[in-house]
Amino acid sequence: MAVKQLPTLSPIPEPPNRLVGDQERFDTMAFNSLKAQEKMVNEDLNKALIPKLNQFAVDVNASVDAAKASETSALASKNGAASSATTATTKAGEAAASATAAKASETSALASKNAAGISATAAANAQNAAEAARDEAQDLANVGYASESHAGLAKVDGETTQADAGGIITVKDVAIGGDSSDLASARGQIGDANTVMAPDYNQLIVSGNYYCVQGDSVNGPPTPAHYMLFVDSRDVSGTVTGSQIAFRLASSVAANVLWIRSFHRASPTSETVFSPWQPRGPLYGDGIAVNNGTISVPEYEGATVSSAGTSGLVPPATAGQQESFLTGGGEYKPALTKISDSVSLADSATAASAKAVKTAYDLANGKQANLGFTPVQQGGGANQLTNKVRLGWDGGAVRMQVDDWDMGKIVTTDAGQTKAPQAASADVAGKAQTVAVTDDGQPAKFNWIARTGQPEAVWGGNPAEFGNMYVWNPASFGVNYATNASNAWQTTLVPNVIAGDNSYIPAGGTWVYFSYANAQVAYGAVAGGTYISGRHIAIRNA
Image (cartoon, rainbow, N blue to C red; front, side):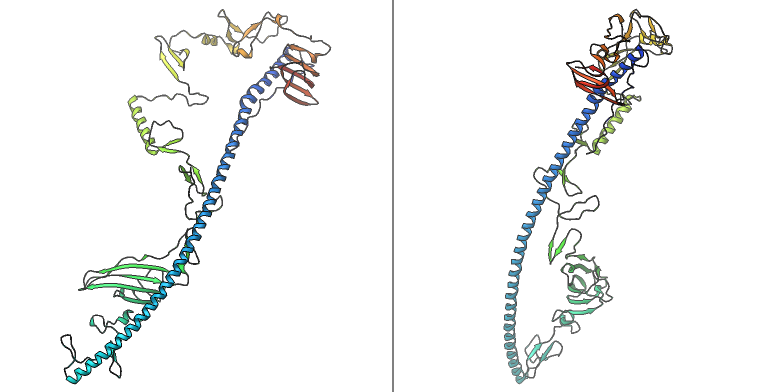
């Protein structure tokens, strides 16, 4: 909340000194001092200073309410975070149970694998025995070597098959498609993955499992490392389609990354085209945390004056915040305005969209062109209000009206109209010597020439009729004490205005006073009958 500057009070003129000067000067200074005090109380205090203090109190209360709302929102966010932590703990327990079940399944699968291996060994032994008997019978019958079309003797090649001293034949390797130069072991499809030093990944397009040692490898995944490469491909008459999956093993779980790409060759003579490598593993960036192999997303942490915020889950909005927005500080705050495309909406809480502004602009431009002239803006200038001003011709002169107030004719130099009385008076106001017109239409002239004697009338006015001046008969004026009274500082100027020195003011009502004592000036408002120190002037205002 911005603290607004409070206005200063009007200055008080120099207090009158009855001991110096004549009665007329004293009366003038006393009147001016009282008028200044009246303005200070009625205008500065009641109309300016006190309303601003009240508004300041309203602003302070609004800031207190806003702080309370922020505290409530922070408590709700804290409770939501505690609930999320409880949920995360529950999910971690469930994950541990799943891991235990997976381990049990793995043990069961291993047992099944071992049983299958034993069965396969037994079947192979039985098959070897049968084949040995068959071979022996064939040899005895001298039926020749076996082929796809007839039974016969079988030979081993020592590369894909082998036989022991007892004549038992076992499989040593597999020739892919019968090609002894393309063995399954070279592809890593039998036994361990085939180790390839500093490979060109574009050359590894036949199906198989390869352990690629980084070295000076080319065309591999964007992150250089040792990779287990799994290749699946299909070759039909030289048209090759397949994919490569590269898996990086690292000591850190977060560093394990899976990359994948596809490749295609349209014909035996065409160039093999590869797609870009795409990540499929846990590439963690800002806002993702890994703790002991567990991936989690922390809640968004808002920015402060001195530090930036961190990425994370957006905190949930509480009930009643459906129209609020998330600030950079991580808190939900009410939306300042709504956006509308309407150009006629009068809702102060709704902002005009860019579309509405352009529509209004285009509309105004169209109306401006239709006018055929450049209009003059009404109001908006210095010291100008928003009242409606009308100008019109009454048949003989231009007249002006403000709201419902007829201001009369506007007199110009060439209009040829009779001047208004005020303008006529101004013509004869020589250096402000004639500034008024009497009831009979004669100008009143002010002369700065000292006169003696008693005037028949004195010109003056009352605050209640501000702006209207009248002549007064001085014979009706009353003074309680003459100029040469023994105590001039207890002279009563008029019934409701008194001057005194270390005395009580009259009882009754409320009085505004101005005092001077011990080189100090004081002023204020007190009840009637109050003792006032020093020389003072008091006026009753209630």
